[in-house]
Length: 135
Image 1 (cartoon, rainbow, N blue to C red):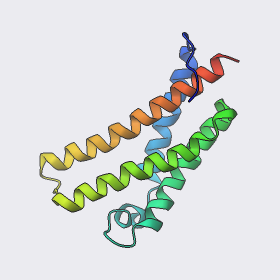
Image 2: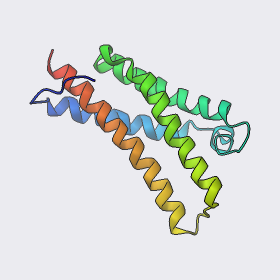
Image 3: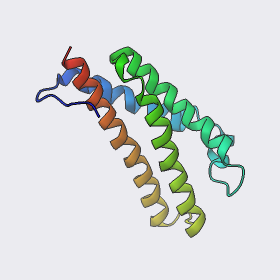
Image 4: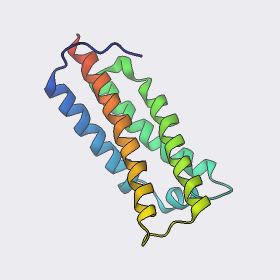
């Protein structure tokens, strides 16, 4: 776990957060195929679609890290695992309760999923900005 300095350059933090927000939009909504989206929700045969989806996320994280703080390139592997756990957990809850889009619980689950991703990205952004600030 990296050490967070007392002060972090705000411009680096803002850039890192912005890049992670854009990365998430691209990976979760624009580059996610129907095969990934529906496949990762299945009871069986979900591993390949989920893996393909999280690889897209991990590659985005890798690009951000290589640009801003190459020593944190390992965050791409963390993103791969964490994103996979969050998405699979969401799928399992959805399979258990069969929430429909007209139910508040569906949107609570979706919002919780997205919030967990954004909190993960915020932690990554802080680490990257902290590392870049201490150089």
